[in-house]
Image (cartoon, rainbow, N blue to C red; front, top):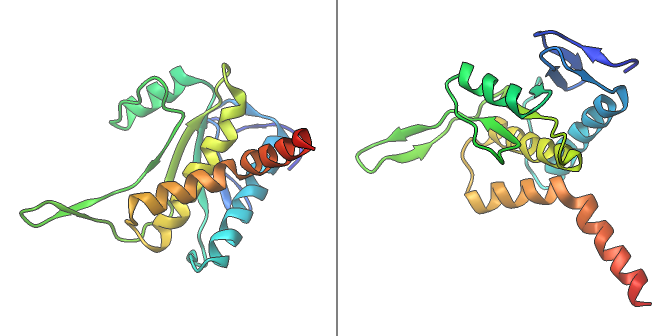
Length: 173
């Protein structure tokens, strides 16, 4: 990926990532990082038996700020609260009188997030968390919440979690 992308409302493919910046500019290194981390998410899930369909790709709406994120949410019938950094749009069916939830595998799954100016270090982990939900949704649909959220948090924050352990180890020497 060369140069910064200004897409103005269209999805542009980078390998298995289709991203729409809605006119915002994303630095090329960030696009490359998102593409590479998406491939790694797929490989890591495959290593534990969670595959994706052959033509799977991530569909990401990446907005410039919270106001754009909120306006975009309103345009598709969602209300994103302050503090929400990203969402994965999943379509769940309620069955029977008890209202049990079920979801067929879905692909592609829409991921919506924004670049937070106040906490830019939160942007990538949030995006990776949502991308992991898309991997799961493409193959299994609904998974137990503890598994889906736990794996998404682990994959999103693994570098931070692993890095902290190394730093603590060095401090304690």
